[in-house]
Amino acid sequence: MIEKLYKYRFEIFLCTQLAILFGSLLVPADFFEFTVLPILYLISILAGILMISKRKRLTWFFILLFIASAIIFGSAMINRQESQENILMRLSIYFVFHIAVTWNIIQQVWRAKYVNKNVIMGLMSGYISLGFLAFFLFMSIELTHPGAFQGILLENKDMGVFSEAILYYSYITLLTIGYGEIVPVVPIAQKAAMLVGLVGQFYLVIVTAVVVEKYIRHSEKEK
Image (tube, rainbow, N blue to C red; front, side):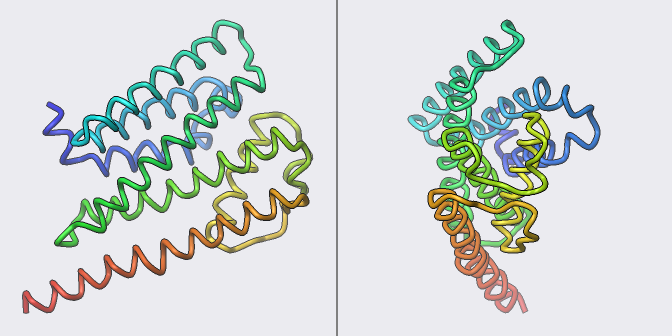
């Protein structure tokens, strides 16, 4: 069963990422933020476990992350609220998870001899994962340094609306677009924004370029 699913590991992980990013368009915001979203993150960890299932030690590490995240989510559901400490713990778990899975995706894409559908899906998943890393980083900075990010989109302090705005800012920064609705106003937030922009460009310039080069090289051999 796992061997069959492993062939579709990139597709499954990409689908969970897209559900996390755009699920709020289909589900009421509050219900999505406090019920659906934590479940989707748990599913994404399971998808990550599938992705690295060939590496046993890392698989067990991901299983421990899944159990810890499930316990935190269960505690929040029982208490009908989530403390800042629990939120930071959850963000830390997701941050570590996405670092490990993003690195693993890059390795699998880098080592691929031929560019096929799986490689393209992996390339997309890796880039989206960088956006999630930026989101967890920015949210952690904001929680530990209130007011680190300011702008018209952050005037609403409702956690659901606020986190959606930070998620938006994360991808805008990764893409180096920068519309100006949100700005980092303290040094640690500014340095984090710089880091995210640089990593996004390095991914496009190096990883994507390598995949394109492999595709061109093998296309020429087939002629």
